[in-house]
Image 1 (cartoon, rainbow, N blue to C red):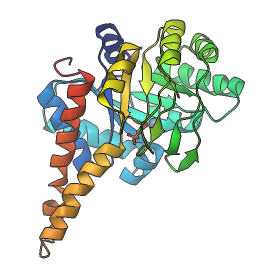
Image 2 (image 1 turned 180 degrees about the horizontal axis):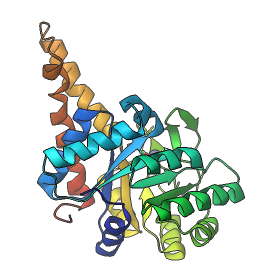
Image 3 (image 1 turned 120 degrees about the vertical axis):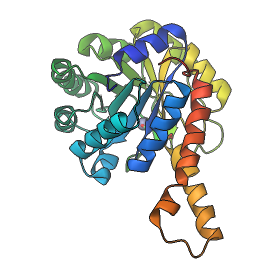
Image 4 (image 1 turned 90 degrees about the horizontal axis):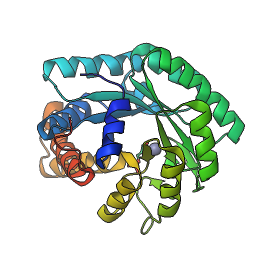
Length: 283
Ligand code: G3H
Ligand code: ZN
């Protein structure tokens, strides 16, 4: 069923695993992720950025595709549709009005007080619609949906204040992770993560899940991380299958025989992530 992410994340925090936010781009992507998660009996958060939302057709199209698949595929696991890196109150409102069950308001690039104001406004609106809210502090490195930025670590005191003053359900403190492939090994701020977990008590979110070594994933989960976002890994897995297939078969032209097989790459990646995150049989 379609749910918000509050219960999923509270349970994950209590039982020491993480729920994957797996980002979707189209119909096949959504099918593949739902299929893998249903088979693993794992809850899942379908991440949809503003860019991916408009690519897929818009907020209503995304909700209708997901709802259609939940019914046709007879999906039983908890599924959330989550706006990834929502850039404004207006964009979060549109997502909520269309039926997204969860939103991230990313006002992390604004001054602290402005971030709090915007986040508060989103929480107020979201609560009325039973929608969960994630906010961010600090800066995730690499490209954030077209916006390229350097890494800036979140400040634990600010995290505590943001959580207390806004009532968010989950917090993404940037602690050295990067969107897209890492240049060398990631250097995550684990002491700060622990401090933030203790100061806030809310489930923490790790962005830039692609390319983080398994031991670091385990460490993060031990320090309060209950949601891990993965996008690039899926894109690379899908593209590899499709690229190899086109290189091998010069005559194929049926799109179903080109796009379709890419799903195998997505399914395999999702199952691997679920295994590392420990969310199998937690539905
Ligand atoms: O919000 C989305 C994630 O942070 C994805 O990061 O593309 O590095 O896996 P990634
Ligand atoms: Zn992110």
